[in-house]
Length: 479
Image 1 (tube, rainbow, N blue to C red):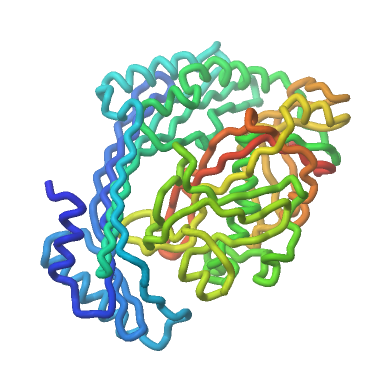
Image 2 (tube, rainbow, N blue to C red; image 1 turned 90 degrees about the horizontal axis):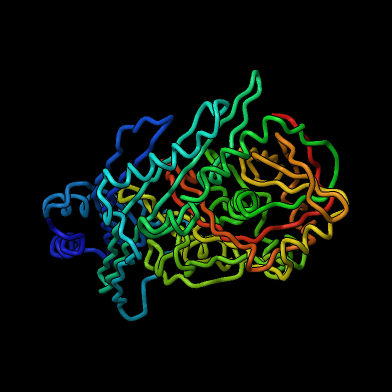
């Protein structure tokens, strides 16, 4: 089979006469396995290949995508991209800067400890069946499932300036869930509600504790059936990493996307309460809050060396000691808004252009153990595992629900309560951060299908975070 590097070279031979061009070739292969209530579900398989061609001409930029990677198909895509570049010349929202650095040569294929294909499909299904069986801890468990999805992504970016960047990685998304029911009451516990995901192979399931989790998940679902509802009131809130990650995603990540601040997402995904004048002056959180774009964390969902525009990706502070410094925007948005950004121009597939997307957006660890954080609380609650979220279209007012919570009284963790929720305002919530867990509390999570862009792009995002303690948060119960 023709390699994606050969496809990129094939385009170089038929590229149109223009000021500059690039081609991004992507092949994605996937396998999805699941067992539900003891029954093996149909296996999901995918194999997708195509290319996005971008052309610069007469101060305009155009692009065209094709699944026909023959010389004729690539030539037609090049002509279509050139035609668009000529149509929009003189109408671009930002000037196009030509590359001035030396050509980049980069070729990396991440190899996991245990490849996804190290086990046969039948063997993987048998392992998942055993995990699913372990979830059924009694007759009150009425729904249970174990799953694992894998994607192998191989991407080449080549340019007329001589760049050749190839990055290949695997990604695994495991899942466990158990629902317990008694009369009119039903409660569900999961493995982070799909938020546990890592780059790697079959070894990821061991790394995230997948095989040890089923009994605990089922027992906690049963426990919730007997638990009282979460109380209502203002109190200290201790969020565990499997809830912190979605809080980061929705109330830090999306508000800091530069294209959203510029208004590009207004019709679909909304705007942002953040305005350009806030960068360098705005207190986003307490002095404990340090947020980084870090594409170099081994195994985290969105680790990479170059973004899909070919910009080198390096760790950058977005928020330092609570102060807002930098936005989430690639080279084009940075030129438009004149605000420093990061290498996060990303596309979900070959048939989508790169736009500003979160990648690995992390909170740096603090210096408190989990026991230290709990000891600070006289009257509060610990919440874990997101189950619902709602946030306005400027990413400011929010409400989140969790699967499970435990009351904290006089520095000690007490009884379990069900249906816990909390609400707040992004512009003030992070300033109430009064305690941050140390490295021992950090856990790596991610969002498998973050949606944005027209046409829509669903992309994977990583979040590594410690536990966080917030003061005076509005908490309430109810399913």
